[in-house]
Length: 113
Image 1 (cartoon, rainbow, N blue to C red):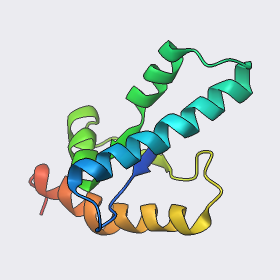
Image 2 (tube, rainbow, N blue to C red):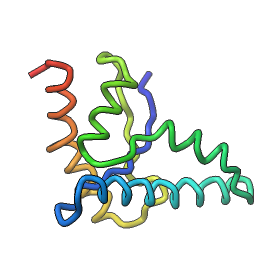
Image 3 (cartoon, rainbow, N blue to C red):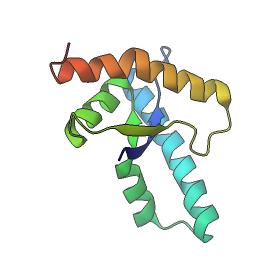
């Protein structure tokens, strides 16, 4: 059974790694807030924090590190890049960055090269 995880990834080359992380966190907060608000009519900060803790959020390096720290190498991840994101170009960009930058970093971190 795959583990479902939302991905909020930012690899904007015009931003520093820290600014990429901040932008990814902002995106995640907005999406998760909208989700919980639509689901229950109110935003519960505890539920929002828990949902963010279950997501992969940050720049490519951070997302790779989160995967290595949180998931067993034999886990299969079902990644949601389009969670409350109707901008197909952004979704495609995050998927491309994941495969071209995050995935190779995960392999290196796990010594799978």
